[in-house]
Image 1 (cartoon, helix red, strand yellow):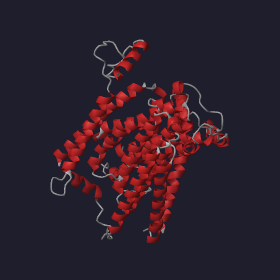
Image 2: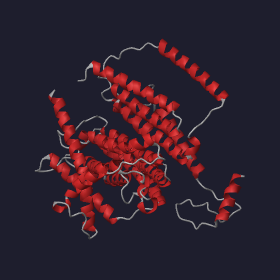
Image 3: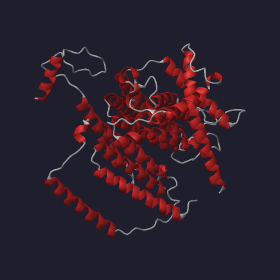
Image 4: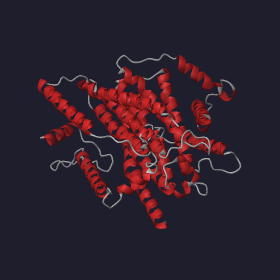
Amino acid sequence: MSSVVTSLLVIVFVLFSLLTTASLLIWLERRLLALWQDRYGPNRVGPFGLGQVLADMIKIFFKEDWTPPFADRPVFVIAPTFIVITALMSFAVVPFSPSILVSDIDIGVLFFLAMSSLGVYSVALAGWASNNKYALLGALRASAQMLAYEVFMGLSLMGVVAITGSFSMQAIVKAQENIWFIVLQPIGFVIFMIAGIAETHRIPFDLPEAESELVAGFHSEYSGMKFGMFFVGEYIGITLISALLVTLFMGGWHGPFLPPVLWFFIKVFFFICGFILLRASLPRMRYDQLMAFGWKLMLPLSLLNLMATGAVILWSS
Amino acid sequence: MISDATYTVMFYGLSATVILLALLAVNARQLLRAALGLMGMLALSAGLYVMLRAEFLAGVQILVYVGGIVVLIVFAIMLTRSSELLEDHPAKLTRILGATFSIMFMLIACYALGTTKFTESESTQAVRDEVRDIGLALLDRGANGYLLPFEAISLLLLVAVIGGTVVARKTPPKHQPFTTGGDLRGETVAHPPLVQDDEHVVESKS
């Protein structure tokens, strides 16, 4: 019985911290972008503008939730749920500390990859159901981009899996007690990070929603809380990629002096700020550049990395 | 940990939903909804695999079928014109043939299911290290190994990849030295006037 209560508590803790982080991240991103671009950002509501989070939430809940008459209604409604559900599900396998994790299944990494491969449905269905050419173009771009980058996202993680000898996230963190995998797998780390940004379609890979050419891409027709779900989904996605970078390459909850959970959150926060800095400083790529970069550089690199890792493991054993 | 009754309820719930979604996939008038039904059906079958304690298989099922193949189907549907896909009225002959074959298939399936003896598996402990077992079996050269099919499939996939690239690749026609084709290295080539472009399309079809 107590195990049920503990796991329920952990689930509530994870969900609560994720959903609050997602809304706080919107504020953090706007403030940091403003700082790096030498302007003010939201600083009026409450201390440091923190009340802006609450104001935005109230606004988005009370906005008219409009479904365009030309849209395919059922598909239009379920599309935004995919991105949030799959991102939240992926957190089930992320170990926050030695004891705080929802489930330590044997196929943790595979589970994450499976869930992230479902995220593409959200974008594709939203664009199709909107029955709008900009949305459809955005969805087409997004599907092609996510399919392409998913391939070597998985491949880049296989080096880590091969070194650990397990798909379990907890085992991967434990294997990094002496040396973090960023040292052993620097190429895998870089490739996973790039693929992660492309999967969450953030700048420089935000072609699906490029506002200067596609209005807002796949979510042009969305408003109210349905749009809010895309927005929250994107921020949970950023948190997820950061959490996985920490778990798989940066030693997870390992660290001196401070408690493990705190170390985990500090590292995740560092990567989230890194993603925001990327957005503040990089321009958007062109579509053919994006595809050529993915298929002609990233994929061969990740294959080479995997082969080299395998060779070293064979040679040393 | 979970009682047998819960398992039974879960099994029948999952199975019923899988059957409903499969019916949706077959009966939906809109191609995209059919694809959605297929996607849900495949995803929930992964749930059945989890109940059989074949977690690796469940993960691969979602990764390959739901996250790969059905996404490609959806992608193909998006590239076609949706108005043409809204309704289709198959010809009478097609319907009769379809019904005959479905009934025949159902009879065969019922016969096969009726004559198979299902035995309860001895223990649930045996599947503990399934990822390792699958990996070893795939690369085993012995009588029970799958090395040959594994290599044959990799060769087939390689052929498919090369074939796809060749089909998708634009080759400039021989008699026209300056055309839109030949943009093979991802470099931007100055586009000739639109008229010439049209000619190229027509001639390559003939």
